[in-house]
Length: 109
Image 1 (tube, rainbow, N blue to C red):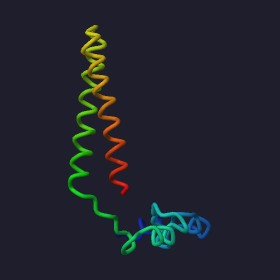
Image 2: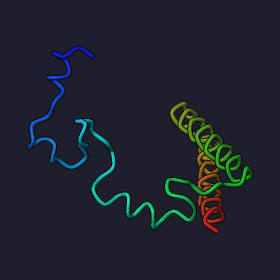
Image 3: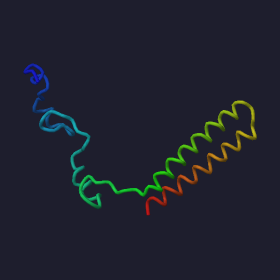
Image 4: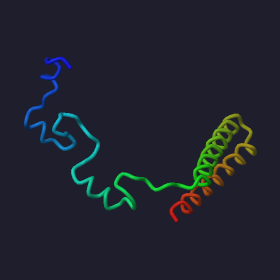
């Protein structure tokens, strides 16, 4: 790095004390106190996320894809004036929404 750029990147002592700024002048997304909370909340090592079963992941993908496809068809048919098919597609969207809540509840346990 050239010296001119390095001088421009240096922070004043006031700016270095701002939340989210580390000593090298780079900003991080962690807030003061986040490390303590994440260490307490994590069941395993710090920064490790719990593993989701493959079936839950696939179910989420299928449900979100089906819900978006059914909603798009419902809107398309309702705008086109085909009311019965449009309302049926919206009903299928609601079914996918209920399934999403059920899968999320199952994933919590």
